[in-house]
Image (cartoon, rainbow, N blue to C red):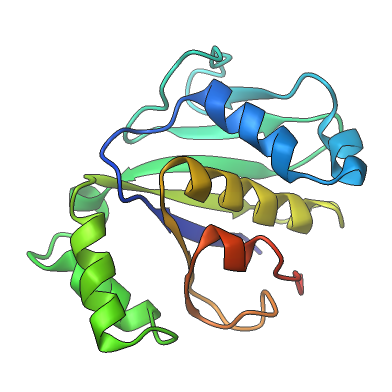
Length: 178
């Protein structure tokens, strides 16, 4: 079973791989650093080409991580117009999944998200190792920090947080249930 969370940015620029890589090493614990290894890499799914540290991720592209441990983690950069084609998509999306937010917070966050033409999907596919669930949390948190974004949990019972929209600070300490 695939597990994923969405990260919506409040800045227009798509993240650079080296920034994600560097921040991930700051966020993970010493135990998880051992799981990552010293030389993590990101590869484009379609071409299997290694992404250089100074390269910005591309809209519409899916990536996967090469870590010290086997993993199924992926990052996708999804165009809002490809995935959601409504005029008020940010507001509609946040009204659906932001059940932990007030109406005013939903309105404010939808305006912030409107500046970006994309969002991220961070996924872990079936056959994952036990440690991968924590790495998914840390990867999503890392990307949210970099893009001044928010993490959207769209399924119950995957984390000790329910369906909702969370700051990186809130999501960073959630406990996985998968």
